[in-house]
Length: 88
Image (cartoon, rainbow, N blue to C red; front, side, top):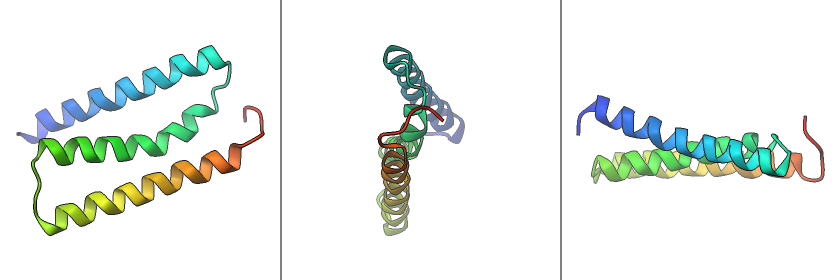
């Protein structure tokens, strides 16, 4: 798969995630959930690209795992930081 095709598909995935989050934030009347989902977006696009590229080298696996750890850490950190608070 070419870089441009991968970039286009990845952009579509993140667009769907963030528009869905925005719609949910309108329903909940709380836009601070966008901050929480932002970190997870990195994880989602990371694994989407990993699968599409059919990466199988050890470097690809290490990078995918590190991005996942970082993205989940960011998501959990913001979730805990925002817990019980209103919109910022």
